[in-house]
Amino acid sequence: MSYIRGAWPLLGGRSGVCRCLHRNQLSSSSSSVVLQSRCTDVFQNLALEDWIDANVDLQQRSVLLLWRNHPAVVIGRHQNPWTECDLTAVRRMGIPLARRRSGGGTVFHDLGNLNLTFFTSKKAYDRKRNLKVITDALRSTAPGLDVHATDRLDILLNGRYKISGTASRLSRKSSYHHCTLLHSADRSALSTVLRPSCPGIVSNATPSVPSPVANLLDHAPMLQWEELVDVLVRQYNTEFGFSAVSAFVDPADESAFPGISRAAAELRSWDWTFGKTPKFSVQTVLDLTDKESAVRSSAHLNMEVKHGFVNSCKLFVPDDWLPPHLSAALANALVGERFCRRRASVCVAAVVCDSGDLRGRLRRLSDAVLSVMS
Image (cartoon, rainbow, N blue to C red; front, top):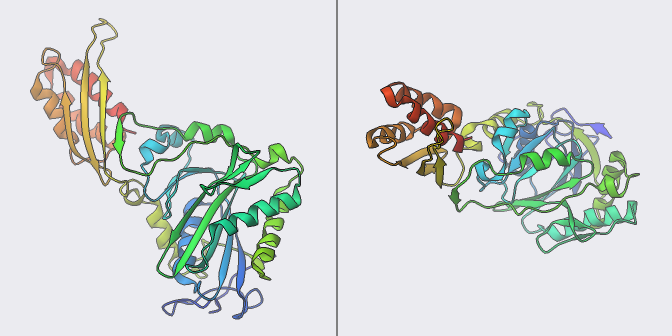
């Protein structure tokens, strides 16, 4: 295994951009190459996927990219982060949230999860065959494992436990198909973060399909990480008739991958992660019960969110609990703000401060509204 660096235009790139692989690791006649990322930053690795898809001539060469990340939550291109994960828990645990460019559902990554990305021409795109690489590799190295791919293109263990999920992206001439493979992931963290943040969301965003999961190591305790990687590379070559060389790459190396830092910065941005969320509405009941007096009351919240910003907000509060002009002032203060508790709390604070004797009730209403936002 070698480390790839330097600047050799050998990948048959597009638009005159120099491809950067070491001459000894990849000749211009190679039909495939296997790359292993040295980086464990989710944004850099996702940017590397996009860089390969945009800059490598996949009509001439297939690429298998193997990578893993420090703990991260990754949502699909058309998903709603507020319905897919517990954003409060994600922030508390210091776990980054990333939106990838492919479709599919939400996944939890950590160092016990292996990601595989199969890059090919659009014509050669074959997800079932890619998954066969994985299932055949597992059967060969651990014959006791009962693994098979489903019609949904997941991989199940013992007919029940999901060990691999899949997603893909097709361009005009190229494609990539990536999947997870749970070797020794932290299932406790996975279950903690993969739960909804916000009640009452109505959306056409792509929902994830929850499934029971398992780690390979729980059922094949002798299967070490390095052995798993090696058998996958061998099976990839066997399945496709390649003799692909394998090498490490550093996706943070701007000299090797020109423009990748800018791509990673875009993936880190709020505008991409939250602003690309399909429009949605929030329709929920807010509990306004006064815990000290035990006086029960409630309000109805109807909110429209577009590009991550509150587009409209209506609060329906009993007139005998709070005058309509105060609830309207609170609702109007939220319009135009990010659907974000921290940002929204700043804009409603001024409304609460100007509410006189009813400040306590208005604060209770604003706290109830903010609790819906993460």
